[in-house]
Length: 94
Length: 94
Image (cartoon, rainbow over all chains, first blue to last red; front, top):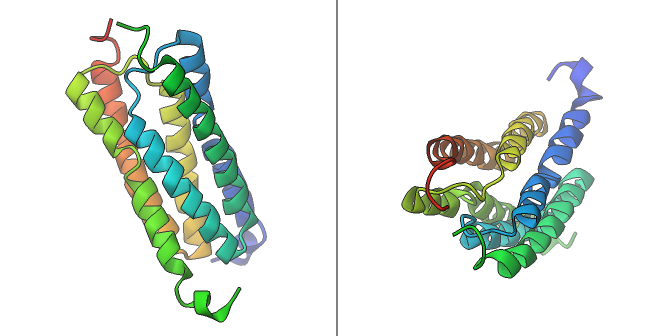
């Protein structure tokens, strides 16, 4: 990689992290506002929760603070979304 | 990190990648089957598409094949899900 980027590429990781760590936030707001979650796939939420947990562990081995921090925030938002799924999943919308 | 893990921690990354790279697959199947996507947040899909694209670039700088591969697959599934969102987003379910 060019030298210019060698000092700056981490900003790309930080921006990537900022977008994906809060990626489920619009879904949380929409689900809370509509009180309806029947179109959301529970399996997708659970699969991401397991996968994201393993990314955190992988980040610990890589000693990469960006991977650890981003995935920890995503896991937190997934837990909130799972709460709303169970609260609103079987009501409203139909 | 203990020596034992130094040769094996990448398997955790591979498992993490396997789960999250196909994380939206159950959502694709559910949306295709129900023909309804009105509870899905478009902003969440677009935010992940942008963020995942930047993770791919970050992975290229890190020269980490797991990050590049996993996020490339996720981006592909997001594009499929966006297609279904626009196809089914405003019909069915209500």
